[in-house]
Image (tube, rainbow, N blue to C red; front, side):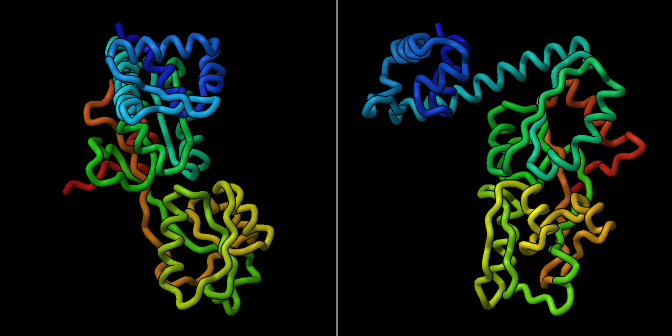
Length: 294
């Protein structure tokens, strides 16, 4: 009989790339991981892994099956959350995911006020690039995502939006005579939505300015403050730097850009997720509003 433990072993193997690493993640022996995957393969009737030198790799069938395994595990966790939340929303689990900027600058204050009002809700938060958070929602691994606009075709429901404006910032000395084609651009990590937007802006220039890629929102902001270059960033996320004079907005064609935050849940949300959405929309200090009707 297929069990969550066997499915989890396959998913961890796919993510970690080796039986040893999967065993370390699961805190079990390597033989346990191998046995679980072997049992799955025997039940399905096709090989799920092949030998690859000293290690293993998923077969085409294994790659196909692991995508379903993620959704099965996510749906099971969602079912548990739904049942517990239905019985008592104030004690149910809430699985959140957010892109980096939202995770660092939008959610902390909201989660603090939510926890103060609902201390027994079991909170979980994953912070990752845009390219990772939406698959989490699609695979039912999280209940609600805070990010930019959801991708087309995603089976999900926008529950609330909040203002977010992208601007180009740099050291105050860069304002006079700013030339975007001559500046060094501090770029976010691959997979970042802001990076993709910045790349589109730079494509509109007649030159190819120098770029320095850093690993996170915090890194590009720190580098801009230090005078290493300029960057595209959420105005709300650098408000204190702008007010203190550590950074200044720079004139860039095509900016500022209106890129509101979206709180997006499963089409049928758990009761505890609904509790959090209500908090977003009604807390006195919140800037969140119901989505505009179409």
